[in-house]
Picture 1 (cartoon, helix red, strand yellow):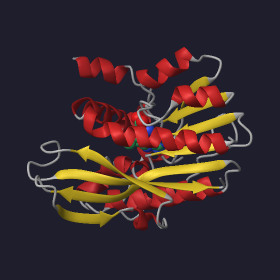
Picture 2 (cartoon, helix red, strand yellow):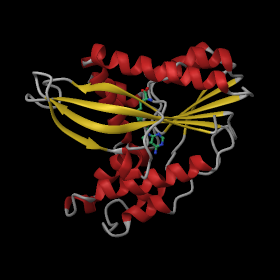
Picture 3 (cartoon, helix red, strand yellow):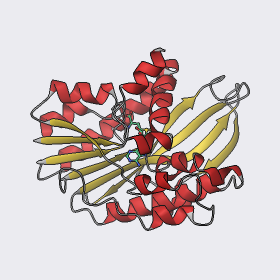
Picture 4 (cartoon, protein in one colour):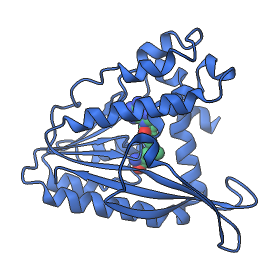
Length: 266
Ligand SMILES: C[S@@+](CC[C@H](N)C(=O)[O-])C[C@H]1O[C@@H](n2cnc3c(N)ncnc32)[C@H](O)[C@@H]1O
């Protein structure tokens, strides 16, 4: 019942709910509640870097945060001190982000915005779209101009890998083709990078760079590079995120991510 009420309080268009975005938003919040201490260094590193890049912006009219979610990795108060306008954009806007807008009504606003530009059209054909045709929805989509207009700083906050993956999992065609969500993820990530490339301000992309499985004894069991699949070079900065300590994901290993930061124009 508590979950149902919490889900209702997430502002998310019905077509994005159908594609699993509100559910994913709550899943992230729940995991954070369970492993708060493990996530703290990663969240602090993200916030610190965002503020460092923000301080480099010569003009500070607007900062746009894409995938702001619950603003766990976003230093909203610091950004509100530096910028005249802080736009927190997400397809699923929860109570945490709205609290920040309530605290700084003149400076901080929350916007429901689909950074992929594909979701409304995709939801309409979710049941009948073929696995061959689905990735093209992301490739040819148009997210449009940034919400609030061009920004002096655009932060893409750990959402690039989700843009195609989450909706990809909700497509009927995925039942027959398990590779489809990953193909949607690659198409959506490429579109997002192209969209970021034509922005005029400084851009900071935060994204998963690698996925590691670490045994209970601290030994690395597996390492998979993630950023290369999106055509990204080595990150400018990198740190570890203890995403899912034992037994969160597995009884046998800790799931750790290396988070990368790519800085453009700054
Ligand atoms: C891993 S979370 C990022 C966490 C967030 N920065 C925080 O600190 O809480 C990814 C976020 O991307 C958002 N997202 C996923 N697809 C999106 C889309 N198409 N447009 C905008 N936001 C999207 C999700 O709703 C989620 O809040």
